View 1 (tube, rainbow, N blue to C red):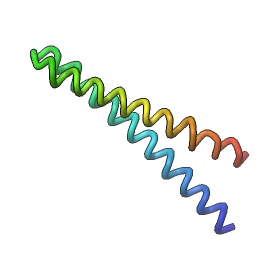
View 2: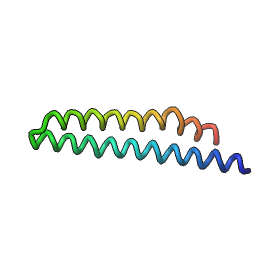
View 3: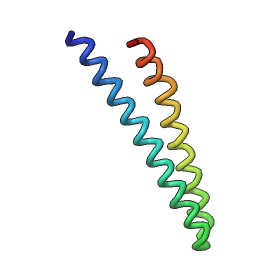
View 4: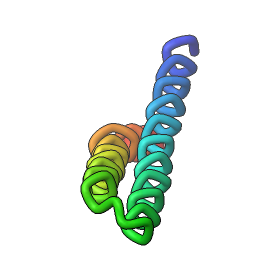
Length: 74
C-alpha cells in the first residue's frame, strides 16, 4: 500500500513538473513575441528559443515518464 502511494505521489510530482515546464515555456514564448513588437529582436529571439526548449522539455517529461506510469497503473 505504501509503495503504491509513493508511486502515485511521484507520478503526480512528474505531472506537475511537466505542466509547469510547458506553462513556463508558453509564457516565455509569449513574452518573446511581444518583445519583437518592442524592437528588441535579440532578446525576443532568445526568449522564444528558451520558451521552445521549456515546452519540449515538458512534453518529453510527460511522454517519457508520466504517460507510461499512468498506463502501467491501469
